[in-house]
Length: 305
Image (tube, rainbow, N blue to C red; front, side, top):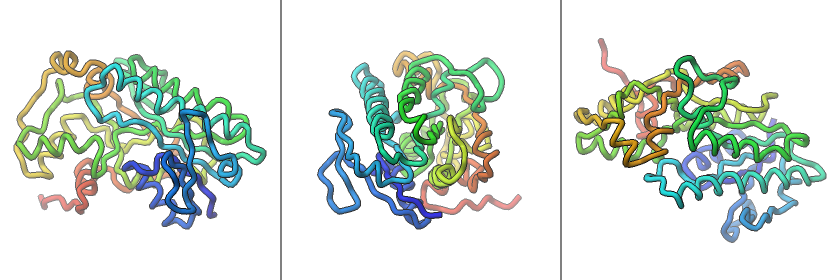
C-alpha cells in the first residue's frame, strides 16, 4: 500500500537513504525544509518560531522526522550540547503540536530517537525495549526527546526509532575510517563495550517497515550481532588493509571528551531489536564486515577458510 509521506531531516545521510527507499517503494514523498523550497515537493517550515504548514500535515498519511544535530561531531562543548538538545526537542514538540491540531492527522508518525536512552546501562543484561532508562547526558536528552511527542499520541500512532550507530558513507564511521588510513584505528578503553550498529540500508528498510506495521512506542533498530567496539575497529582496519594497534585508555578519553566518551564511546549497550524483529522485520546485513563494506560501496566476500 502506497502512502503520502512527509519527511523532515531529508538532507542528512539517513534522511537521504530513507527518502530514496520510500520513493523506490512507490510512496508519494514530500519534504519539510528550512530553506526556501526549490520545487513543488518541498515545503518550508520554521521549528524555531513554531511554524509548520498545516496543509502538509493534513495531506500526509505518515510523517517521518529525522531532524537533529549530529552526535558524531566532537567535542560536545556546552554550546554544542545545547544544539544537540534544541535541534531535537524543539523540532519534535512543534511537530507534535501540529499533528495534534490537525483536523485529519497522519495515521503514523515515525520519530527519530536513539539507543542513547539506555545511557551507560545496567551492569549486566541485554537491553530490549522494556529496559529502564540509563544515566547520563544522552539518556536524559533522549528521554526528553521522546516525551516531546506526547501531544500527538492521542491522535496518531507514534513510533520512536531508537537507532544505534548507523554505518554509512559518512557519520560515525568517517573518523574511524580516516584514522585507519594512518594505521591508527582506535580501540577505546578496553574495547569490550558493545556498540549497537545498523547498516544504512537496513535503517531505511526498518523505517519503511514500521510505517506499515501496527507497532507503536519505542523500537530498537540495531543489528543482532552484539559486536564490541574492538570488533568494529578491527573490521575497519581489516577492510582498509591497515594495521590496528592504537588503544586509547578510558581515563584520557573521559577527560578530553566528557559526556561523549562516557555516554557514547565507552558505554556498553548490548541492544536487542526485539519489537522490530517480532513485527516480522529481518536484517539483510548482520555482520560488521558486510556492513562496513556496504558503507564503502563494496560487496563483502570473506576469504575462503
